[in-house]
Amino acid sequence: MSFVIFGPPGAGKGTYASILASRLRIAKISTGDMIREEIKRDMDLGKKIVDFVNKGKLVPDDIVIEIVKEAINKSSRKNGFILDGYPRTIEQARALDSIGKIDAVIQLGVPEQVIIARLSSRRICKKCGAVYNLRFLKPKKEGACDACGTDLYQREDDKPEVIRARLRVYESQTRPLIDYYKDKAEFINIECNSVDIPPETIVRRILRELQEKNLIG
Ligand SMILES: [Zn+2]
Image 1 (spheres, rainbow, N blue to C red):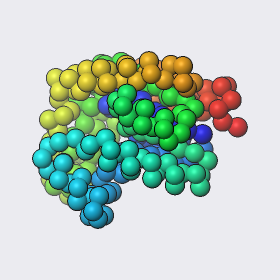
Image 2 (cartoon, rainbow, N blue to C red):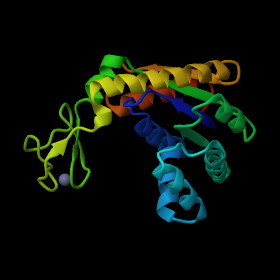
Image 3 (tube, helix red, strand yellow):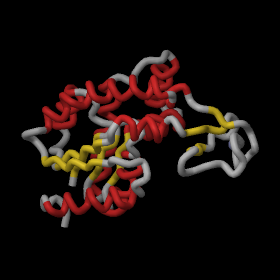
C-alpha cells in the first residue's frame, strides 16, 4: 500500500494520516516531522538542515528525497506507507516515482470558509506552546493556558488574510500534482464541509473508499 494525502493547511491531514497509518499498519511519512527529528538528532544531516532553516530557506529537494527514501525503505517492514507533506512539486513527484509506485492519492477538499473558521480560532500559549481552539478546545479560563496560566496568542500564520494567502499557495502547488497523478494512481476525494466532523468519521469514509477500489483488504 502506498498512498499520498493532499489537503489544504488546516484540513487536519496529519491527524487523518496518523489514524490511517495505525489502522492499516503502514508507516506515516511526514516530511515536516522527519525534518524536525533530524534537527533534534543533530547529526551531519540535521546540521545541514538547520543551516537552511536558520537562513529562512527551504530544505533542498535532494536532502528531502534522501530522507523520504530512507523512510520508504524502512516501511517495507510494514504494510506500506502514507506520505503527508510530500510531494509538493512535480520534480519531487518524479523523484518519488523512481523509488516506487503510488497506489492512491487521497485528496481532502475543504471549503475556504471552513478552514478560516478552524484556523483563525486557534490560540497558542506564549510559554508552553499548548494549542487551544476557541470553537472546540476552549481553555478553562478565557485567554489563559490551562497548563501554566500564561496568556494565549494567535499565530501570525493563523490570521484570516495570511490563511487566504497560504491557501492560494496550496492550490497553485497542488493542482499540477493532481494532474500529474491523474493517470498514475487511483483518486479518493473526500469533502469535509464542516469544521465539526470528527476525524474518525473522515477516516472511516477514506477506508470505505479504499476498500471499494480494492486498494485495501
Ligand atoms: Zn501554557
